[in-house]
Image (cartoon, rainbow, N blue to C red; front, side, top):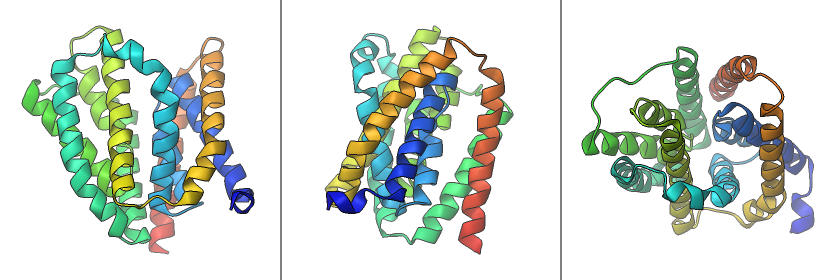
Length: 248
């Protein structure tokens, strides 16, 4: 079976993971938001979500110890509770829905995310346990139901907190890691992950790690503003492509 997965699909997947991880490290931009939809053009959406979750969870493991002492637990814990409940319920839809419906949902949310990022939307609403729970529920529902990393929802919420940048960053990174782990755990519990997905991850994880290292290197040597604009328009292109392929 190992020989069967060494093909053009795997090669393209490695390139996508390399670029997406580099994007995250270079621009602070959600590479998973690009990785999942691009993977769906290569493999089944459920396997695309599972593959991204495996790669993202492993890639972030090395930063977790430093996050635990920095995060603001009073906000992260309610977000996590919301993630667990909504993603666990919504993941049933992800597994049973047809491919066209999932791709349509992905395309719509990606376009909305791109709009939020381009307009630089700022959250100015209430904070506390209930709003944090609501953010986690919305994020988990989107990710669990349609497989789209709903990181922008949490990012907008966390960045509005009057906390030092280090705390904001820790809140975001830990919540993203928890999100992908919850979704991965639900797919695993539903026996929805194929053996080929695990085999592909063995090749794609190293590409993700290499991409992250490359992105950090470039960040220290090149301005990032122009790249963020390119990334935003890339999201729009991906979202439109998903919608077009769904309706045609």
